[in-house]
Length: 425
Image (tube, rainbow, N blue to C red; front, side, top):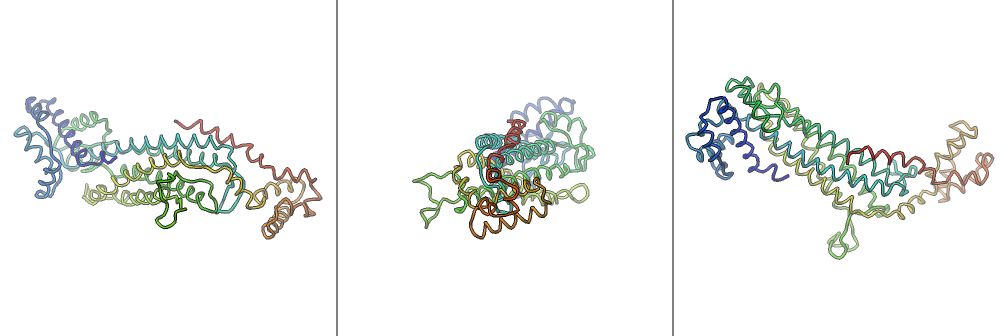
């Protein structure tokens, strides 16, 4: 990803665009074939030399053309003919964003595969489902991870659409009128580069495309932040159901406390998600430029696009390693389910009381009172209900036991896990 956004790569795209445009003009009989041959043979640039010239010209594309001209000689007069800087800048940027999207998509593919595998592995690994951080009802770790896989799959589709959106170039000249050259040149160059053509560019390609790309990255970063935040919660001492990889004997969790095994890599992911999301607002603000173009978008994109792509690329690879190598303590998950003394089965009791003829509110109040007593006395809800007349008058002891059968919560789990088959791997 660093190579995609390097100066060497950027200028290399510029040179390819310039040569292709000259090649088209040669095919049209506007440039002598021998001059094109000279350009192809001698056209080169030096990043440091371009930077040196730019310190004088205060213009990057002009400095680039000057440096190429130094190497090519008189035949370089055909370069940049009828073109404006943004013809090169924006078309080159499209190539960079497309290549960056391809790397990100590769990262998403790998992470989805790990999530699908872990979900199937732990499809029946019971754990406490928590809403608002409080025990709700039993779930499985596999269902939790399945939700991540489906969300990542949607993120992948958004990124694919964004990749297509940004894969557009333009060589329409200073205000989009093609006054400096035939539209055929734009067709030729973009086709050779595998790009669509912005159908109505001004001096620049419309920035809604870049905003869509940044939005897709931001949403993906949000998904990774969701995963990281959940894993950090599950790693807390009071929960201790998962741990990120730790190299015993080498790694140190704290400079002062030898016992520490902190979820620092997931914490780092949450922090880096803020960098990616921070790019979204300026990307949207870049849509509004003065008249046919100003330069307010340029400085922002030179910082936020590489930074967001680099951060997200790292996050995807990091998440893949962490989820693949994490430790899952299924025994601790079962142990934690007992902490709430059967309260997670309260809805099942409620529904069965309704089936026995109680009105919903009356049944709700009966179970709520029993649940409160169980929590206050640290007694199991089953024990409290066995001394509740509204319950004992309607249930035999064996029926009451059945209300706390964990197996019923696995009844439809495979229905969700089966849906993973629909995800492209």
